[in-house]
Length: 493
Image (cartoon, rainbow, N blue to C red; front, side, top):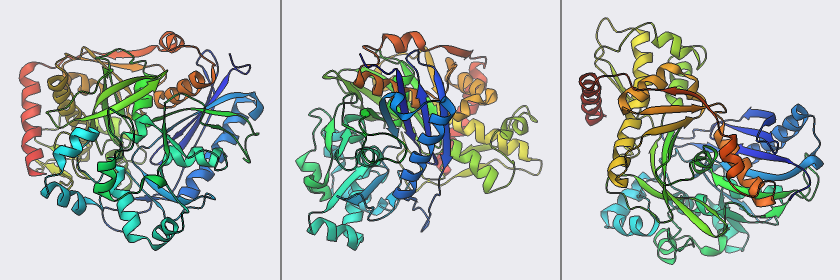
């Protein structure tokens, strides 16, 4: 058992960094958050500054420790969760060679289309569980190698390292001692064999990514290294847990049994189901992915990804000026009882599962002379929920399982109107936990398991508590009407 009983969780997300400190009873005793800049150099391109991300992590660690009234030496472990497919390149002394290419970025659409035209998608699916889409890391790495002279130069001189954001953070936390990723993040690259859990030679050759620039693939809970040379922490704290943000949320929701599922509403929305110790090949456009690996046992998941969820609310706020802050959308949407004929397809960055159409674009349909801002706001919320219905329906078909309840998390779950409509169109229970920041909790749990703060997942099961259960109230006829309206709009997007 570890002597100290506090675990620090770094949740490095798409728009900002959260840092939380959790005690042995799974209570959050201190936390901090800081946003960072989004870079859009061309239409469809999205980038992040790796150095700025690291600065937000250090600043948030300092603030979270202060909020908890703790010192760095009080920490037993560090767990990490991260925006998954976002990809960076840096030198062996930790200097970024280019801004990171974000998971939302679509610059490799043509490359993916070319590989599909060559008939490669079936092989990619069988090897990796993924589809050929610019969402994933592999084509981003290929683009960096082919288009950034500094990256090519570092490769030629033996000074290049690639990684997703988890890898970058561990590298910085350990002052370059550990170049590592976990199986859940590696499973999002297009480069890992889903069953062997190793970088795959065929996929590396297909995307022309050399193996020697990639991190070691490790379990989701083990000691990867220890803190060194940090401004905010003493040397020697184990970095001992890691998972991609959606897998961390599944873990933080205590979805440890096959068939248990959760949906996270963040910048995008992500539905994951635990499918047990073997991957399930999707026939309905979903992804097969690694959920986590603990004590040599691998757990797999089915995943449906919607690229835009909370980002659509941000667009209403920042792009259209319909609301002053994101939380205002519920009050505005409540001004009307229904959207009438208005429907919104949130394809602002293409459509993810089950359509996988990177060229799709956002759409308001059914607008008339009497459409108001309230109708638009309600349509945005309903559009978020309707795309989740499509993912859930595909998941039921692929898994052969009914889904009696969905656990939900993320910022948007505070919106009762959205959660009730989600339960209505799914025709099932939607369960909101008391602590909706389950992504951070998942990182904390994994870090604590890796360092011996907790011996098993039992403590996590006991700590998880429901806040509210939303029961389906909508009739079959009304649900069918909403779904028909949605399907028609998606065809036009």
